[in-house]
Length: 252
Image 1: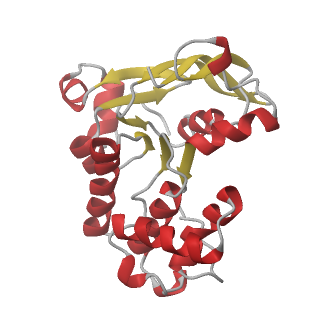
Image 2 (image 1 turned 120 degrees about the horizontal axis):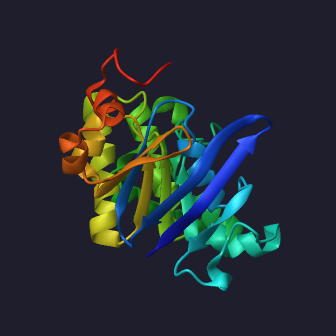
């Protein structure tokens, strides 16, 4: 297994978010985490790179060995872990004062110590992978939401990560842009061999590109399986969610 979440618990004060989450994600898998707002989807993936620490449980990056447990590492020890992971946020988080290629080049200069010319050259290679090379000199304000997302994905790939975490990658995108982002995520898994964890509410994405899906509900994994498993389940909670029904056991 590539990533293992073992009995993860997390609370913020009196509010309990995760109540013993167990998940194993395979190498090269396109794995979706779904569920209603506030169930802990983003909270869970932030544990993987040390942005949050679990109150209890273990997280392994690789096999279940003590040296692969990441949740108790110091900030210094987390640095190589974070170099193996990349995260694409919902709002893309590009720097407005830099054009597209400069945004992509930034991690190369900061973490690999490349010269500006070397970093820009490698950044162009990444932009070509997401079909954005013709917009290399464009600033974020000049790009649409989908194009900014593709630049953010290019930047995430610059350090050759083994794992990419996507937090609502298609939110606010038009249908065509959303499907292009889906296509890129799928290609990362199939062509590059990246393990992708995608937090999403986008049922089209979930159906079309996921290998497996985990639905979180009331702090635990309600269902883990393929899209076919979700379509065929008799669980009323899962059925209400994937059908988007107003009436059912899920309370707002």
